[in-house]
Image 1 (cartoon, one colour):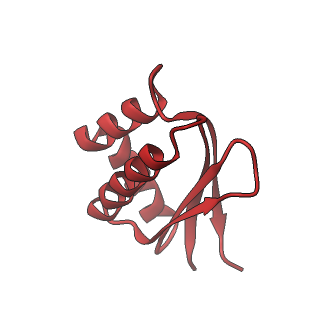
Image 2 (image 1 turned 90 degrees about the vertical axis):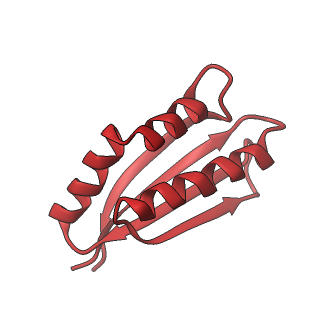
Length: 101
């Protein structure tokens, strides 16, 4: 059973290029933590611009391991702080887990 997580982030005005670069760093960090099929998708028909990042894991236990590692990994913590900090590129986000049916 394939499970995964998708996060949609709202990019602050004028920060799209910087946000894309940050998302590339996040994708590399997720892959290093064991995430599979990491995707970054730019949604351009909305204001603010949104970026969706998704990844998969083999099962819910593996998904939990990846998300737990993300919380304690120094690289991941720096990416999160840079994205969500006061001067970050992201004004908000929504994250969901999913199961492929």
